[in-house]
Image 1 (tube, rainbow, N blue to C red):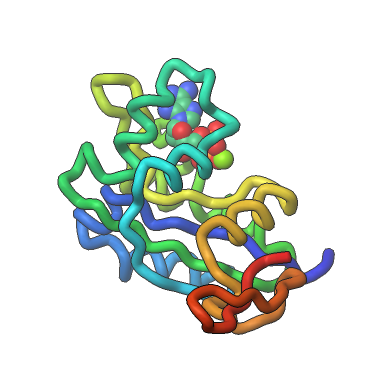
Image 2 (cartoon, rainbow, N blue to C red; image 1 turned 120 degrees about the vertical axis):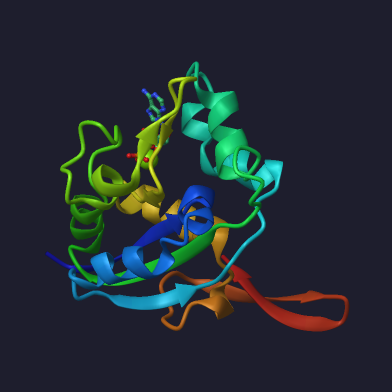
Length: 168
Ligand code: DAT
Ligand code: MG
C-alpha cells in the first residue's frame, strides 16, 4: 500500500468538549505524520462544499448547522492532514463507524459521539473516505503553502500584486 494523505477535521463538539488532546493522542497510534494543521471558522459555503455529496439527505440542513458550529455556539473546527502508509483506512478505523452507537466503543466516535434527538450523528471527527475524496477535501480546506509536503500540483498566482501558490 502506498503512502497517502487523508483529511481529519475535529468538529465543533470535539473542540467544545476539549477533546483535541485525546483525539490527537488516539490518532498518533497510527504512526502517521501530521503535515498540515490549523483552526478554521466555518462559513456556509465551505460547509456546503465539504458535504455536497449529502445534499439530498434528510439530515443535510442539520449537518450544515453542526459543522458550521451553530449547534454548539462554537464556530471553530480543526482540520489536519495526516500522511503515511494506508493513512485513509488507519484513520477511519481509529475514528470508528459513522453512527456513534454502532462504532467500536474504544474508537473516537464510539467513545465521544452521540445521536441528537433530531437524529443527526454528532460524531466528533471527520475522516476522508477514499483517495479521491481525500484530495478534494484537502484542497478545499488547505492552501498549498499550508502543507509541508508537495502533495498535489500547484501553481503561482498573482493577486493584489503578490504571488501566492494555489492548487492547479
Ligand atoms: P462519514 O463521516 O463516516 O464519512 P458520511 O460522509 O456518510 O459519513 O456523513 C457525513 C456526516 O453526516 C457523518 O459524519 C454524520 C452525518 N450522518 C451521516 N449519515 C447519517 C445518518 N444516517 N443520520 C444522521 N446523520 C448522519
Ligand atoms: Mg464521509
